[in-house]
Length: 586
Image (cartoon, one colour):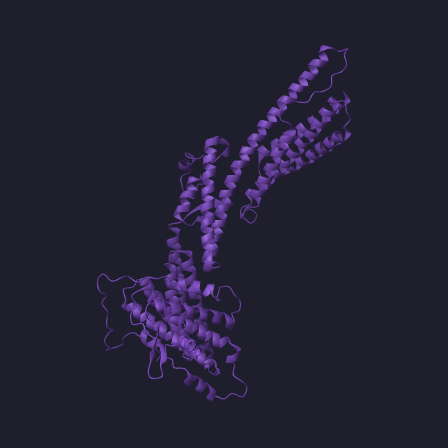
C-alpha cells in the first residue's frame, strides 16, 4: 500500500492501537495557518485563482519558488544538504520532529513541490508519448526515480553545478511517481504534527491535506474506490474547517479546497459508474450533507456577531466591531437597534442639527468611511482577492460606504439649502427696497423726469444660481452611489430624480432673474441691452417647463411638499415675467 494510506489506516480487529506520544509539559504549541500560507504562495507565484487554463510554465514557476524557499528553510533549521557514501551523493537531512512552524512549512513545501512537479510534467508537451515509443520506456522512467529519495530538485540543482547530464525522456508515469512522493510527504507531515504539541486546527489541516494528496496518488494508481473515499474525507474535513473559519479569507481558502476535493470525488464516482462497479450510492450525498451542515453552522455563527444597516431597501452587514462602533457614532441606526437612543446623540434629520453638531457628525462619518475603506483595501489586497466570501464582504463594505457617503451628502445638501434660503431672502428684501425707492421717487415729483429703476443692493440672483449648481452636483453624486440604481427598492432613486428636476427648475428661474437684473442695470445706465431681455424671457419660459416636469417627478415619488413648491415656483415665474414686461414698458 501507499505510505499515505498506511498512515491514514485505523487499527482493525485485534491489532494493537497506535502508540500515543506524550507531549512534555511546557512544550511550545505549534500553530500555523497552513492553507492560508500555501494559498498565498500559489497566488503569488503563477497559480492565481481565476485563471481559466494553467500551463506547465505556471507550475514550473511555483516549483522553482518552492525550491528556493526550501533551501532557505533548511539553512535556518540546520537541515542543509549533506554528502552520503563514497560517491558523495548530496541528500537532505530528514525531518524527525515538528517543534516549530518552520518544520511544518518545510514538509508542506516538500509535498507542494512534488505535487507541482507532477502537474508540470503532466501538462508539459515533452510528456506526450512519441509515436514509436514502447512500453519499456515507461519502465525505464520508473527506474530513473526512487520514490523514497528526498533529494528532489535540490539534488538536481546541486548536480547541475558539477556537470550537465543528458536530458532524459519523461512520460506520464513519472508524474504519478511525483504524486506518490507528495502523498508520502503529506503523510509524514500529518504523523509528525500529530505527535507534536500542535493545535487541533493545524492537525485537521494536515490531515485534510494528506487525504487529498493520497486520493490523487490512488487515482493515479487506478484505485478509484480508495481515491473516492479519500477525496470524500478531505472534502468533509475542509468543509468543517471552513465552517469554523474566523475570517472571510479562511472561509474562501477552505471552501475552494472543498470544491476541489468534491470535483475529484465526482470524477472518481463517474469513472466507477462507467465501469459498472459503483456500489456506495449514498457516499456523495453524505459528503454533501456534511458540507451543507457546515455551511449552516457558519451562517449561524456569523449572524450572531454581525450587525446590519438599511440601504435602498436592502440589509447591509457590518463586518467588524470596530466599524460597528464607528457606524453608531456617526448616527446610523443599525437594524434592530433603538432609534431613540441614537437620536439623542445625533438627530436623524439634518435640518435640526446645529453647526457644532453638524460638524461633529460629519467628522464621525468621515472616520467611518475611512475605516470601511481601509478594511476593504486590506480585504482585497494580496492573494485572497476574488474569493466568494471575500467578494461578498467587499460588496457589503462598498454598500456601507455608499450609505455613509449618502448621509454626508444629505447633511451638506441641507447646509447648502439653508444658504440658498438666506441668500434668496436677502435678495428679495433688497429688490423690494429698490422698488420702493423707485416708487417713492416717482410719487415725490410727478412733473419731473421719470426716475430710472435702481439696482437692488446685497447678494444677487447669480449667487443662488451657483448654490443650486452645487446642489445639482451633490444630487448627481448621491445618485451615482453603489446600490441606488440597481436596488430592489427604487424609492431613493425616484426621490433623487425629483430633487434633481426641482433644482434644475430653481436654477433656471434664478438664472433668468440674473439676466433680468442685468437688463434692469442697463435701463438705469440709460444703455440698451436687448440681448439680456430676450435671454431672461427665454429662461423664464424654460423655467416654466422645468417646473412642470419637476411637479410630475414629485408626484411620482409621492412628495406632496415638493409638488406644492413647484406650483408656487410656477406662479413666481409668471410674476417675474410680468414684472420684466412692466418695467420695460415704463
